[in-house]
Amino acid sequence: MDIQREAQKLIKENRRTTEGHRYTVPSAGHHPYQWLWDSCFHAIVLAKFEPEVAREEIRSLLCKQFENGMIPHIIYWTPGVLHRFPWGVEGTSSLSQPPMLAYTVNEIHRNDPDKAFLREVFPSLMKFYRFFIDERDARNVHLVGIINPDESGEDDSPRFDAPLGVPMDVTYKEHLAKRTELVNANREGYFDVETGGRDSFWVKDVPFNTILVENLRILAHMAALLERKEDEAYTKREAELIAGAMRTHMFEEGVYWSVMGTTHKKLKVHTWAHFVPLFAGLYSPEEAEHVIETHLRNEDTFKSPFGIRTVSRVEPAYRASTEYFSWRGPVWFGPHWFVYKGLVRYGYLDDARWVHDVSAELLERNGFRECFNPETGEAYGAKKFTWGCLVLDMT
Ligand code: GLC
Image (cartoon, rainbow, N blue to C red; front, side, top):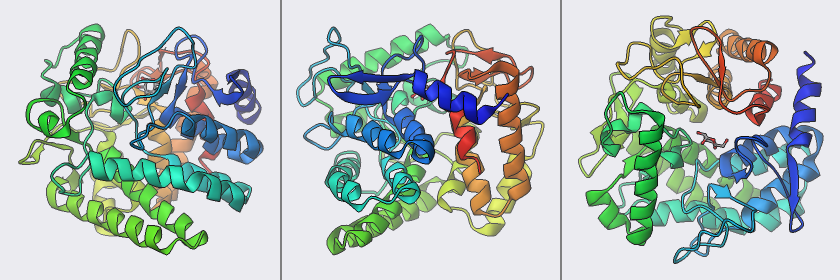
């Protein structure tokens, strides 16, 4: 398969224009809307071939930014779907997703420098990152919380079983019902984080906070380019405060763990989240070596013939197969991309090459599918799903 040609073809096929806004749907059949971190993935790839389309993908996201700075994780772009809630915008969800926007905008600028575009989007980006820092860290501990597993992008990951109160053998449908209940409860509670912190789902997740740290650093770099000294100082400071708090509250036994509650109780489920801190350089070189040797290269736990298991095979919650799509074990291209970048950052080029090659093989074998059985390579979920295009950015 000519991956580059097929990826470019797919990303074009999934392009939509609604009310003059251009964006890409992850899968026409299964996910026919615009998603926040998916759009970042699309724009990272588009930046290489069609930077103007990448800029439009970002503009479409930003035009639905809420007054408080949040950018919703789904924009339905469908007249029939009207979710209106107190501070929302019409036609969107009430949750967000991992904040990859600054990284993405920087990638577009790196591929096709355009300072006017940076200047145009910078205020919205600042507002977006400030939203998490101001509204999602009620007790000022410098860790940002998510209010629903969907905000992590890993909807049914077993990292969230305990805080969500679901059993290990929960079915996909039961899980979805529980998350939907949570969305409704949050809407009724007007997203009061203090109340949420006490009674409801409120998790400080490792990937989310890692992505935030790296993106704040990139935002600081952008602020410097635009000579916005105060914004530069603020974003730099916040990035290091979060990195420090992650070290204090999340690091144990050589890896980072997501935490919940005021006591920062560690959610001790071994998932690919152990590898995400490599993306932001949060491990020392010795720690990175340990994580890679003990976990990433370990065939009994994470390393499968078809890629990196999203959950360690020895976890009781591990499930290789799924009826729909699942974050309880299957291999995904998004995690592969984050791990690839992290490995390159630390100079583990052979391991990074393996992540690339195994991803390319999945595409050859199954085409652009959503996720894969780590033991058999069988494909699940959406068809013509865009995340496989990220292989083009594993360079
Ligand atoms: C699924 C994934 C989520 C993604 C969405 C759209 O819900 O878990 O990460 O953003 O599909 O592709």
